[in-house]
Amino acid sequence: MDSYGRAFTYLRVSVTDLCNLRCVYCMPEEGMKWMPRDEILSFEEIVTVIEAAAACGVYKIRLTGGEPLVRSDIAVLTRMVARVPGITDLALTTNGTRLAELANDLASAGLRRINISLDTMDPVKFKAIARRHELHEVLEGIQAAHAAGLRPVKINMVVLGGLNDEEVADFAAMTLDQAIDVRFIEYMPLEEAKGCAMGSGNFSFVPNQISKERIAARFGELEPLEVGDGMQGPAEVFQIQGAAGRLGFISAMSAPFCKLCDRLRLTASGELRSCLLDGGGLSLKPLLRNGGSRQD
Ligand code: SAM
Ligand code: SF4
Image 1 (cartoon, rainbow, N blue to C red):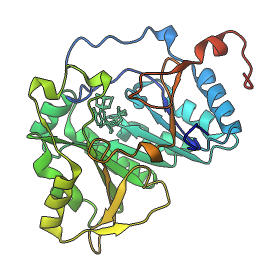
Image 2 (image 1 turned 30 degrees about the vertical axis):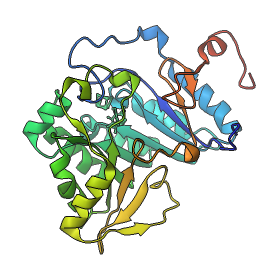
Image 3 (image 1 turned 90 degrees about the horizontal axis):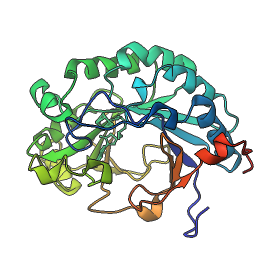
């Protein structure tokens, strides 16, 4: 529990800083400098931190990155995490490009739910936004996740003015017949994204209110939902009347939700952070590599 009375029950674990895409809002197209391999926590070190966190009340883990599915043997780590006593909710966020080949292994290793990032359904725009790989790989990954029984499948779309903002209603339409949740994420000017994004004139900021209005203009007024099952997090949740899936709006910039934030983050190099924007962190590597106990 922190000094604002927020109980931390959710730990996001970055398993690698590497990625096979270069999304315009996240990384520069060329010249990424990756961490030396021995700086990255081993599977055993990650699991030690998760065991210690679980002993303090964390029950939800999300594996993320960089791109978690480019780390070798990610299904092995998934199985190790799924077995940690007290971890009852295990999820993963991926760009989907390797999901078609890995979805079954991940599901049998104990993964339950998955978030797949997809910002456009136009193959040409995909090249402009993600700059590597192909749209069809991600679409096949989404189908594979469904077929492997991962539920719910959530699609994350970062809304970028002038690049994909005209597709928000098309994305919302995915929820009509399929039990897919689509979440619209406002672009955040993160430290990591510096120099590769809005400043370069590639796109503009779109507040979620605009996306909501565009969707309502096509499908009628959206029904607000109270959800207590993990769709919520910081998202405001709505549904198109009669739709099978739901719509989430994550408005970190236009309606900050800091007071509701209950997540801790473990970076790939072993820093424990409570907030991505405050710049502070606690390096756990010295403890992990110098014989510290779980209690430490
Ligand atoms: N590589 C995986 C992926 O793209 O899903 C996992 C890591 S990625 C950093 C996690 C999520 O953060 C993705 O949904 C991505 O779209 C989102 N994201 C990355 N940079 C962002 C930014 N500057 N503003 C808002 N969302 C961002
Ligand atoms: Fe890679 Fe995810 Fe960042 Fe895109 S958002 S560059 S897929 S880490």
